Length: 122
Length: 282
Image 1 (tube, each protein chain N blue to C red):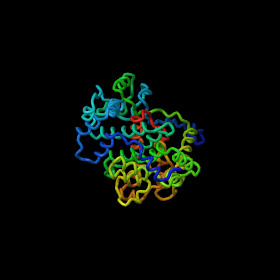
Image 2 (image 1 turned 30 degrees about the vertical axis):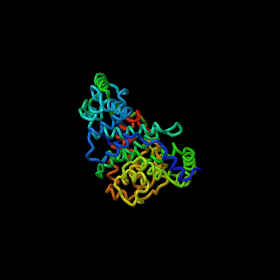
Image 3 (image 1 turned 120 degrees about the vertical axis):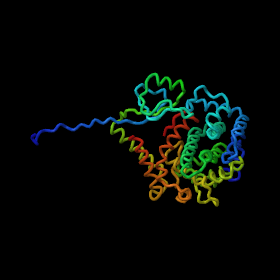
Image 4 (image 1 turned 90 degrees about the vertical axis):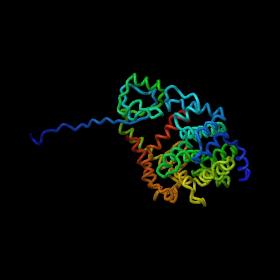
């Protein structure tokens, strides 16, 4: 193969999945469970990884389940994500404005920032 | 402007929480407390019976067939769970009942629940009773609540000062009134006959090192409030300094705290939803 051959551009298809707690009423068939659904007696009603169907949703409704944790596709653009991250960083700066930025408080601030940023991206 | 004595007197006239709640709170560290005693206490208060049955029959617990009586709820969900629910619900409803339109009740209760959830999660690695931690943390700011209800003009001046000077509420309180919500809260806690450890935790939650007796509960509640404000759980104040000594006394590292943040968020969402009927948002 000639080394000067034009290479096709590399396209990475990236689809991002987020984990979100939603009220059961917003559940749609096809959504994947990210957490076991169980009642307060510890009985597992549905396992993590199961794709919801119309009938499983209606069963959960009958059992009066409130919220479920599911995977949803992230439709936010890089710009929107960047904007959210900037907002979070701004809010944390405000919250920590009256305390030392070094030592334990500096470490705590960084820890909270890392956690909140991680939450946005995950 | 009222004097410190007048403020304490006025706040002291605030109706106390229902008798049953105060009595149940006093059993938190009592190893001899029994399900029978708990059921009897709840059954003295019809409002409480209704609230607890509503909760255990809510979607959160999803028990098929429903739970018709308090005694059955204790059997099905366990003594500790019901005692905790009674305390959290009782305190939330007390705040709601006594507050007026001016005071941001939901934001306040959400903050109390937030501090409660942090305390509950962090109590585990430091071997403190999780339910005591939750309830003591929920009562942390009763001084602020009492002030807002009993001395609304003073409370408003504090809020104005805070806004103008961009400072923490405690600084504003000391500047405007010469007393802060920690002292007012401890005064109320004593009047309500709450456990001594709770009174101590409430009085020193902003400065646990100043207490002559270092109780693990007071140290934990202090850490919980700083963290709840950092995480913006409920109506947050600006973050106040965390005592390194409290962390050392608790043998709690920031690393341990970091690994608990997800769990705290999860509990906070659960409890806010259960107690306030909405999903917590920042």
